[in-house]
Amino acid sequence: MKPVPMLLGLMLLSLSALLTGCASWFDSTTPELDGRFGQALQQAKQAQSLPPTPLPDAAAAAEGVGQATANEVSTGLQAQQRGRSAPPAFSTAR
Image 1 (cartoon, rainbow, N blue to C red):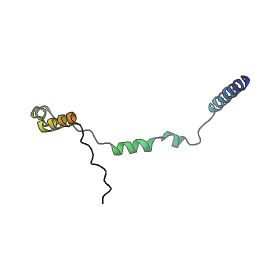
Image 2: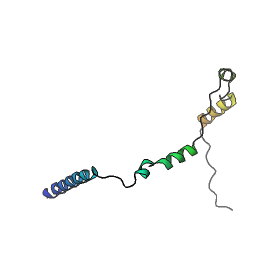
Image 3: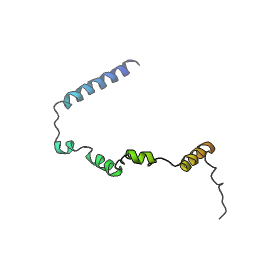
Image 4: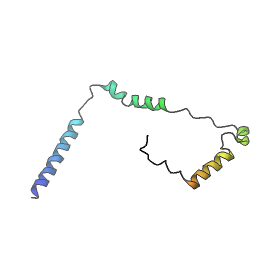
């Protein structure tokens, strides 16, 4: 029973060596397309992302521009402490 896995391993090893040797002489028939590979994905990702917002200057930062208000902070802390409320019960009545 042991010679079969060994034979299979040797066949895979020789096949991989053959394919590696064949890949060294291979030249692409579409070098222009190969050069632009992934360009559509990059364009789609750029179209979906927002430009970065500029940081407020020192005077605006001193006034609290871009920071959460006290009400927003307390609401967020309360929601974190209480957790979410349970969803409404499922009803079959229409």
